[in-house]
Image (cartoon, rainbow, N blue to C red):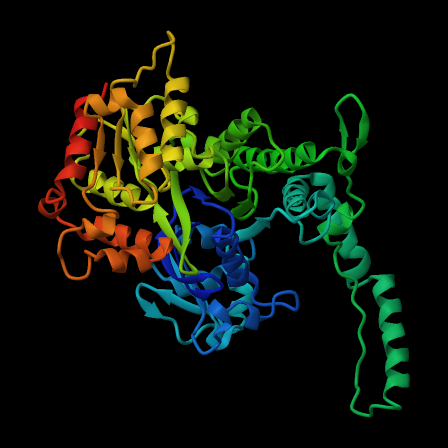
Length: 537
């Protein structure tokens, strides 16, 4: 059983987001855009609020007047229910599911303790007695491995840590198949629970004695019984510790951070392999790993991704927050990549497709053209607004054109100069830049104050100017050049009053809503694009 869809409303920086999930899910974005808030939302979905995270601190902008909820849709629910070991719980879940294979679950601030269950589009109003326990048994096991989690909290055994749960599950499966253990359980039952058990008789006598003393204070007391339960599997592991010999044999928590994190993830892999060999020993897992690349060399990151992809092949599902280009660059049929951004305090999730991916990798590598592979050509534009508009237009109208890399100069001719020089340096196999006569530059008309620097830029790259590779808008800002469509086009004064974030938001809106005909009403931008394609390899 796996998550197919997630919807979040009013949780921390996530005002409203809904997106689909796959077997292997990657969430990428800059710091402080809300990636961890998403993971915390799923944590709240599973566990509810706590003393550490009271519900009042979780609302979007701490506004408790708006309902906050996390809704998760699970698929392959019949397999999940059929895989439950507890027969009573399994029957309850199968009765709720009926013949349907998907179930939607919502935890809401309106009634945090009661999760809303929906099957086949209908909310199940009447749930069987003891359903909460059965439902918790039914859900995939949620493991959130966050960056603040020290290895000792994860790898040492307790009932609630990933390693403890996984090893207990493995031990349970081993013992269930072991005849000696079966004989031990039979002897244990005979010793403590059998009709002729001397231990049981002594316990009953002790209970009667306690009852005599207790009823002196509570006259309604009629019986006190002591029972000896079968041993819990976790008790057999309560002294669990991990020792690693990498030339020096020591406890794992004494190793370096990279070794500790790699070991933890290796245990996860070994557990998955064991389950596969045993045809699923136990329930499925959801692994939410915050910055999975932490402390790992790029080569180890690539190996880790292979491990986690294998882990998610069958029953388990993986969600990763990352700043690593290694996780993003490689394609896989069962993975989805979401770019996480925050605009005006609101976190949003956008699916990354093949046209978006080079820009995501480019940003993760620090925004230097030297970090790119080999695009067909480069178009250097004035700033992020031009970048947002043009990349969206290319995706919508010109996806058959040669693949070019659009680079923002961040409104600075010095940055444009650095980008051109970086391209020249990165792609000069024979001391001659491959893109010397190909790269195209699109700039705003400079202000009077910026004219000196602008002229110096043109003089330094006079060959580009002479070859017609530099294009300049006839206005000082993109906002003044938009088609006259409602409130898209701004006056010079209006554009000067806009904040950078407002300009970017407008560029995204225009890029997503402009028609091809309207886009081509901006002839200088179109001319620059056409030349970049014409000169492309």
